[in-house]
Image (cartoon, helix red, strand yellow):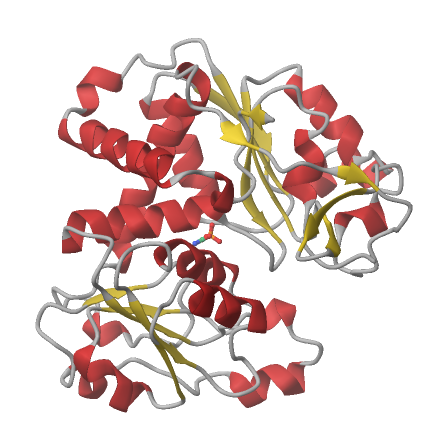
Length: 355
Ligand code: CP
């Protein structure tokens, strides 16, 4: 089956990713050619969780394409505060807008919305699960700034446990030839085992490190991440992890001259501001590339009939997902959709095992 929603970047083929990159580059080269590409179209941004970049870059993307935007960034100012379900909100908004961009703190929400919206839905982050357009942003940046998506040694540093952007980036880059990874974190915040499985399945070399200063010297890319305070069980647990890895001038002095520094942002303390003017510091430019990537994605989803995204073969199961962070726990009417993976039954919303 295919559809026009982007929930998980895994569902896009390398050819489709390449198409988004090419389209984004074309828009960057001649933005005037796209000024009326979405005349008359409406984008709805439904943000149940805070955002600076994703929300505003999507809104700017649609405005630059000639379209208009509606939406909210505080659900408490909508009928959600009166108990309106996700199904009802997205069904209604799908009748107003041509495309929906949604962020929500609960895993699987974008997937659940796509069942009811009747227009393309773009996942702008669902809890600690997925954030596909951030990964598009990251790989467009790599393509433009390093000229390739393969043969890279990539260090990822910080909260590798909760960072949805890191998981998605590793999964995507693992598919390209001869990429290797250095996973820099504390033991408590190391990448989930399924990410290690993916690296091994794809034959990628990887190292595990707890020392940014030692690891940085032969990297092509360092991808810094924030320690995700909002995902910790207690403030005490967060305090023990914050500021463990800080990229500063001393550490940057050990890096290659052509290494680039990326960060999905927001930054807290993990990159000192005195390196913002270093030519290797590309995190602000990266956010701009994201806007062009989102313009390309909107165009392809709305206007390219061949640009359809494949969906998994799903089954309806009697098992209810037990993941307390899954949208099925909150929106009880949702069908129990699942898929099979290595003989296990997995939740189609949050990708956790249900049997
Ligand atoms: N990178 C990112 O998702 O930033 P925002 O949370 O500000 O959207």
